[in-house]
Image 1 (tube, rainbow, N blue to C red):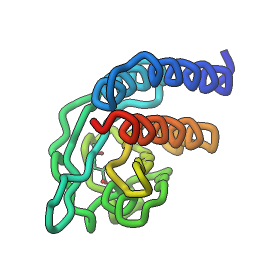
Image 2 (image 1 turned 120 degrees about the horizontal axis):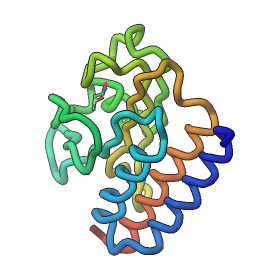
Image 3 (image 1 turned 180 degrees about the horizontal axis):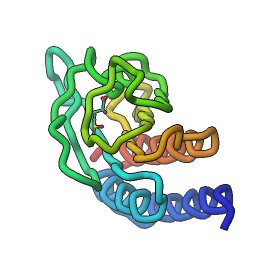
Length: 161
Ligand code: SME
């Protein structure tokens, strides 16, 4: 199967999940499992959510699939995760060894993507994916991961949890 077909198929599967799950937590649980199981280069898949009312603002590890990470709380001025949350922009790093912001989760990680999740126009969290392969997150993958983050944002807006 060509990579593009796989991305398209997984896009359809996450769309189905968005319709069949009850609430954002269940959607996030099933989405990280689906992405981790189906996309062979997505070796760690997880959500970090903004801690409500935290001062200074803090990202807290949420639903994830893959090895446990030492980074369960990330301030917005640290890591690729902090960069994505503070800028509100997708961050793609093709070679984490060359990015001084990178906080290591696994020694095997070579590339990473972090996509912010917005609900009601506010950043509420982010979807973080690590790969053991360099430059794994090409344009079609960025589009898939952004789509996943949007589905979660919409579910949070509709279900509030
Ligand atoms: N690499 C991230 C930290 C989270 S772990 O990858 C799961 C970062 O640099 O923010």
